[in-house]
Length: 64
Image (cartoon, rainbow, N blue to C red):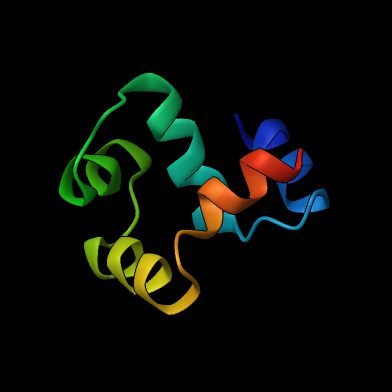
């Protein structure tokens, strides 16, 4: 899993974004709380990232 996270960061994902993306691959759709628990990242980081950047995970998936 760490190797996958590292590879995603090479595409411009932050570590939190990479972990959230992998969590969404496991459970989709999911609310932020579920994603944070699966990804083992703080809940605030899920919402902070989504609101600050306008859903960066979705933007990066479309650009890959």
